[in-house]
Length: 214
Image (cartoon, rainbow, N blue to C red):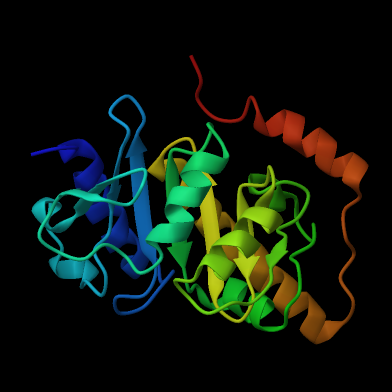
């Protein structure tokens, strides 16, 4: 089986998307690239995360041609491949419909630095303009918006996060859901105080050495 480890990780983190309440039903999608082989493992379209098996996960090349798998790849294959081509530091893409981040996206707002954990994305989470799901227009809007950030909101749709691996991309989604909730709740009470770009530069440097590193 091609890309067994990558396919297994799609199954694992797909279930985590459901149990962490970052999506519902079959919504959202995930992909992981094996750059040495030039192949991508991606969730099949409309698949039940809780029933998904590694052999169900589709393997495609960077042109989107199916290399292995009997199912149809995600309807958002186009923007997954575009992101993986856009930046060499992106090895995994996670797209969810998580409630608080999607609420901000439905307001067509960017997510500002209301809390330092926004640093998982950068100094903010930019907003990609709305376009119908699965279209080249949506793909173009995401690439234009994300730049060098690790996430972008998708207007009236959801959020997409990226990382060096699927664990990192998933962590970005989780942390930004907390930040989105804090922003939503702060806006319900008053006007939140936003951290400055200078402070976020400090946070960005600290994040480089955060956690257990060799």
